[in-house]
Length: 94
Image (cartoon, rainbow, N blue to C red):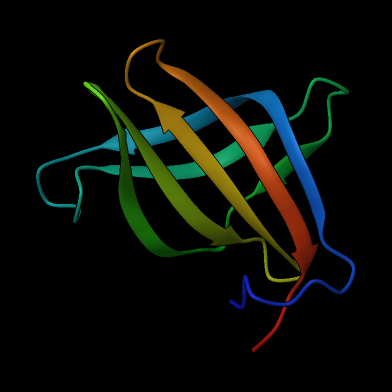
């Protein structure tokens, strides 16, 4: 996945619903498996790439770079509010 390309990339900050699994056997303990936008569009996650925390004072936000195989996405989990957000979507690059 390539987040550096600005071609056909949409920056968003939309609240979404996420289906995820939580397990000590998973690196980072959390793996999103699907998400739904406020319009009802559902995306099945084919691969999770980088997972990294961002710190804002005492708040931690976990960013997940993911793909459905056709489009790349970044979703974030705000650990304060426990809300998930779709941050951007763009063309998929191998």
